[in-house]
Amino acid sequence: MKSSNIRYIPTVDHLRAFAATLVVFYHGMQLFGSFLRTNGESFDRHWTYSKNPLVALVAEGHSAVGLFLVLSGFIFTYGAAGRDISYWQFLANRMWRIAPLFFLVIIFGIHVYPENFTILGFLQTLAFLGDLPGGIQAGPLTNNTWSVGIEFRCYFVFPFLLHFVERYGLKYVLGVLLVTLLFRCLHFFTYDNVAGIGYWTIVGRLDQFVIGMATAIVFRRLEAHKRVLRWMFPAAVVAALACLEWFNGEGGFPVDNWHRIFWPSIEGSFWAFLVLTYVSFDRGDGRTGHWVSAAVARLGQISFSTYLLHFPVIILLIHRRWVPHLAADPNDNGLLVTLLVAWPLSIAVSALTYNVVESPFMSYRKRYIQPERATGSLPAQVP
Image (cartoon, rainbow, N blue to C red; front, side):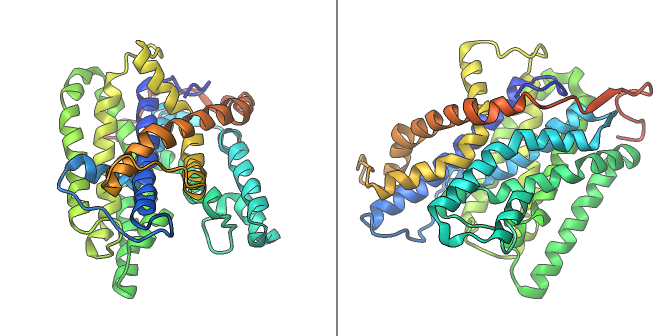
């Protein structure tokens, strides 16, 4: 996504497109599959398990939220490391980028589900705290807004985190990971569960954001060796697929056991490896290249709309029973309906909302990064 603060990197938009698409197919296989299994009567709690890495990838497609967090930490650090940040302008830019569509979705959801409205809940949600108790939950229209609040809290602390990483080196990232790990351990050994706090809260998601920050610092160090990183990209793909297949085999999202203490960091790490190696394919001139690259980058640009609006699109198709039976197997049918109906429709809706709601407000963003310090892009103590 183009910005006056950070050099445009089309490969980052490619990864955003992949993350948004993975979430769409994850919900599509779940919800359309449930529709077929119950003949449209209800949503079941069936979970898909598979030894096929690609099926396991889609079955655990919720992991794409972690990829989004890693990408956020990566791109902000890549552009701002070694430079002074205007804190309030940085937050203002984040507001111009996220708030218009986010607020529109919340307000629309309130009108559809007015019984869930409270003035305190509304104010709390507009302050990006809607994922906490008391926030407005307006059915499927706001189903995916929970992660926006978590990401914005990462924005609040990003300039401080970057300052501390530059002062103390990457060992500070390790310190943050140990602190969040400590909180997850405390929760697990007190209440015998940890999956919820690791998935739905910043106690798990901050891991992935700071891992993305560390990835940007490593990438800046290794930019002169992009060819080596490119050769490592297949290994990164295999690592991501293997980790998600293992996670799926251990019970996947529904299971809450001790390995969920470590899962946010593991998840952030294999996505970071993928980001590090794939971004190395960037040509450095800010151009998307051939038409396929440009088309995928465009999907990345509208990924925020896709992430927020694909769920109500899927629910619309289910409620109106516009779900064709294209395959006997519920999962196969879910994937086909997503591919042929829900995904294209979500893209069309997202393109409209991006151009009408998101893009015009982004023109209000201003430069928040100051000129590079004379001492260089990164202090010597950052390994």
